[in-house]
Figure (cartoon, helix red, strand yellow):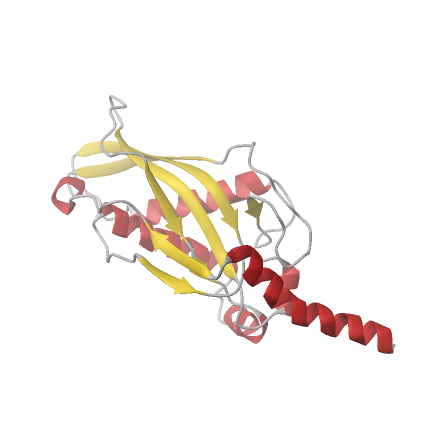
Length: 207
């Protein structure tokens, strides 16, 4: 019993150090220059094309920080590529919903990383953890396919809830999926110039 408790204690003490070592502790929400709102207001999004390449690695390992491009446990076990696609698609649709112009456009996005918390990190830590989300996005003319913006890299890192904070958030309906979707939607609105500019950095132990 003593050895078991000792191992658990060492694991809990080592976890934050492991996360800090692999992650560096600095995170950001960032994107290229905000699109001119006067231009964006002339657009109307008729299609959202999200791509989650099958070349991205996926981990189901219940460790503190799996080494993979996609770590997602906010849906039942299944095709994580499709689940991430659905989340980013919904977020982009919400974030661009304010565009009511005449020119039909399509937003094309490619996911590069979608790293949320494992069960072990979410419920085994306190005041640690980050949702690390990176994708590219571009607006193109829906009729001609002509690019209307460059391909921008968008970083949408978000402080994750863990431990007691995660349990309290879930009681209020603020699941990982809800928080990530809401955050990415705000990021897209900021990138399009139709919402507040949410770019910024923060420090947090976790990955």
